[in-house]
Length: 148
Image 1 (cartoon, rainbow, N blue to C red):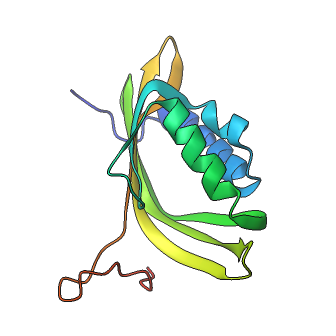
Image 2: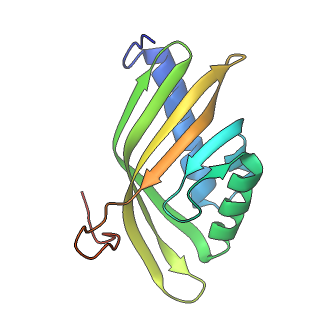
Image 3: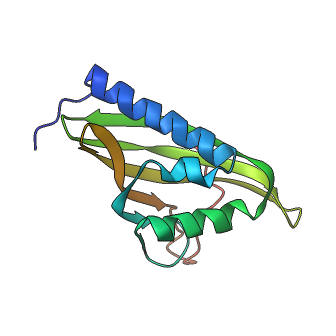
């Protein structure tokens, strides 16, 4: 596969999808969020199980996650990089979420994220999503306090 890194048209289309996705998550709008997923989406999330397959699994996961927050969710991206070719693109960077949980606790964490897109019938859709947090090798626990 040959990619044209930062092709202006393709990159602009992906950036628009990234922004739409951010808005949907911040507002906890699962239907708007699901618009961008492929029927065969495969997702590796920061929580178990090891993978989510198909839009129904993603939708259920997001509905469950959204329901744990009071009000809107804070979400920002850092170090966003997009490599876009004619019909395949990748987005990678760091994601930061913050918000108040329904139990009154605060969530404030960073994670790494890579999203793969494919252009089908002229539309970009998400075909793969991989989120991860580093872990401490000695304790075996996630390193949730890291920041860029």
